[in-house]
Image 1 (cartoon, each protein chain N blue to C red):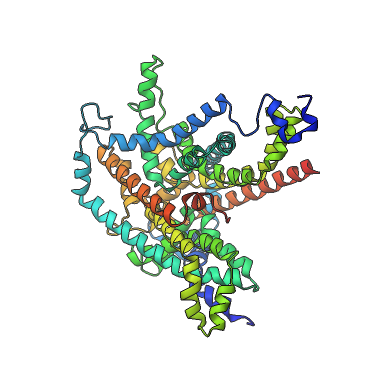
Image 2: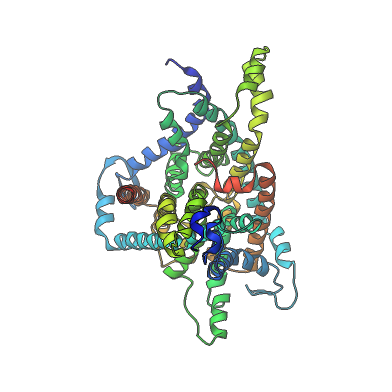
Length: 282
Length: 283
């Protein structure tokens, strides 16, 4: 090696990442192909595709994957529709409200997700504030807690900052004089947003939705606390396989399928939007 | 608007809409989003003061009984200390790893640099769920399942990217002339690092440390797989408690977590600037 210094400097971190990131991921990949039966446990040295064939043929697993992906997709869509306009509205505020409200929107990011899930379970529960308000309005009780709706609401709460941050960052690069020019040329506010602001913040919305989708699809505490025992998502069945069923190979197969499916969705979405985006810009 | 063509500087003043001003609808939308973001945190903090036995809003005065109950609950107290030591240890370890790694990544061009950069930031992209089950497998193979030391290393792994990002941000655009002056005056490389470089990147390093601390303290998905009954962290304890029973004790613990996070945010703001940490100039 010609230049040992950078390698020496990054060696301590590399050791940690090699032993605690690369090694366990490879071990888990191997584990997902190991044989298993409930009496003897994992059969080391014996390889099978049983976990994966089980996963892709059992409607139980397929249903959970489907639910996880539509919940994550819906969460991403709502975050786009709410987060991007919110970032735009914030960017047009004067100081000090601009920075205060930006922090209010982003700061929940630093509060433990368990706390936020618990807060939502109080709001959405049968005796929660939302149902009390609905009762007071004479609309009657709605079952929210332990439904997909509760999971999506709480996921949007957790993920919204991840959408606001990249959109906000790309809005900072926007030149306000272009908007001024458009307004002076009689462009309506709507067409200014559609034809000037939106194309420029598209990369921000794209990267935000990738982060939101990836994190939502693999989220654990929110479906665990707001989906209840019956409404399973991929992360909660991985937990069940590992800690209740003790069927580690099956759990490993589910977890790795989630990782790969996530990567495929992200990469294809990225390519699709990028191509359209390039076409739009000529 | 007929005169605006000749004076573009004043152009927008005549039009109905001035870019940069929010209309009433936009402000209403903003108010709704802000209340949506605050609602679950506020409800937790209010309900924590309830004198009742159930999760209800305090209608008949406020009470600290549930906070007292938290401090008398041995499981929550021991989990709090576990989480605190874990966060202190993993934030410190990740900082010790990330600073030299950041130096290597910003000051040298070498083969594999991009790859190493991507590797060090990858825990941000790989789901903690996947890391959790992977680390559970490793820890059981090496006989370290549920040990505090293994948990500490695992947390150091997932919080390193947070420190690294802020370290990289403070090293990019770093003026090296002062360092070179120190070296030309006969300072050893180590001395010039400790006396010149480190003080200059200290806001980034300490901000990164605190961000790592907060993230380790809050982490639940990975921890739930790699903790044992004696090393259960506070968020894991809360998760397990919330799945079994729901009483105001949980609200009190949550309110304490919110309070602690608020304090950490104030410190983080002083050290590095909260907006810079959250929005992040470097991504």
